[in-house]
Length: 337
Ligand SMILES: *[C@@H]1O[C@H](CO)[C@@H](O)[C@H](O)[C@H]1NC(C)=O
Ligand SMILES: *[C@@H]1O[C@H](CO)[C@@H](O)[C@H](O)[C@H]1NC(C)=O
Image (tube, rainbow, N blue to C red):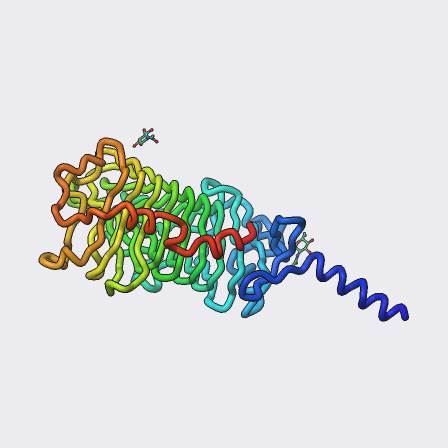
């Protein structure tokens, strides 16, 4: 009798606190608020569960279904951090992007260089800065090479108040649907590149033209890699601030159907009047979808832009700039943080 009653009470408790969301992910909830299943603390000074971020990630079982929060105490963590593809539902959360930093300096190949690699689906990162320090700061004497600060290949990944610092290829936004909110991304050459399907909202895009030799070389903010006219990917910058030093193109195509739009964004005077560069796709510019809409500031004067910049219809602009472009309504609010 006691055993049966125990089981019964246990079942009722489970129903209250154990919620299975879409796709079988699990989180606790109190009323409407979603909470993570457990929290791990990373503290370099030994007052947490782990002293490195990677050790905390390694402790999470493969094919994890429970949202786990990893709180990273302030400090400069000198380690490479990798979330492997079989460890979804992780929230990696620092104290603030100014005080919790992950720094490494690999640079042999683009693929092995990232300081942070996120390969799982359903990842949330908050208030952490990732630095590839091989060329950063840029006067440290090292020759400039591709050196990635973060590579994001998982689907349904969101980033809030994060920092990404490097010079060339800083953020490899490789594939999957991503949402970046109030992040800072800094670099000079192709520093936001890849074939992900992403919205960058309220972000600071910081160009460090003085990192380039010869001085006076032009920077490239994006190098988007859409390969096929039917691919869903592209970069959407919405309500962003674009500023820095030197002169910068908004983008050049890494692949032949590159797609980038800047919407309601603030451009300082660093933007090259032509706006965009065709790179290896001279003669095929009509395949590119590069557009600006509602941008303002001294760099937003479009009177000297390349004539092949797209003039999208209001309907196309609405589709590209709503959260629906990344099907955000179906997953962003499903992520507890
Ligand atoms: C993490 O550390 C806290 C505080 O020391 C402790 O209460 C908790 O049980 C630890 N969690 C794990 C998973 O070790
Ligand atoms: C636009 O950016 C400049 C700096 O480049 C800043 O001074 C200005 O306040 C920004 N404008 C708005 C409306 O945010």
